[in-house]
Amino acid sequence: MESQTECMVALTGRMERMEARLEAAASLFERAATLLEERESSMSGEVRKIVAAVETTREAELQRKLEAAEQQIAELRAQIEARPEAQPKSARKTVPASTAQFLAKQGITSLESLEASALDAALTGLSLEQRIAIKAQLLRAGVVS
Image (cartoon, rainbow, N blue to C red):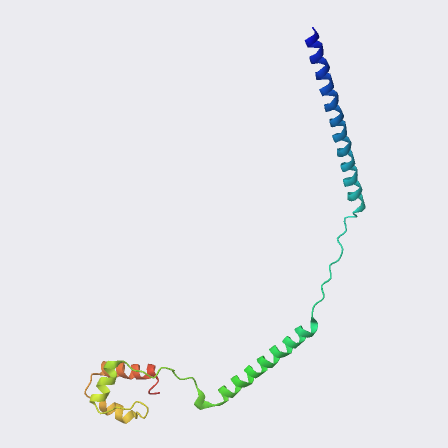
């Protein structure tokens, strides 16, 4: 029986220590809950206005540069449209090899100074479809207009 009594005493001691620890934990929990409630009540729920300083001088400078660039572009476009000789031409100045060989056989070696009469004379031996095809290739290449 003594062993049961000793076990009961030991068990009671452990339970008392556990009870004390649980009470300490409960009191810490209550304090934490109180602090959270106080913090929540101190917050009114309003969001303060956030103000950011914008560098307006830099923005104004960039706006002026943009306007100047747009004005310059408009002026250049007006100048280009005013010149009749400045109409856009094909940047390509090459013709297919077969066309260049054919023209070379006919005595036309320079495509820069190609005259319409010389071209027509060179193409007389061809059928209508072939003449149209060669003239279309020369038009695409920007050699004749």
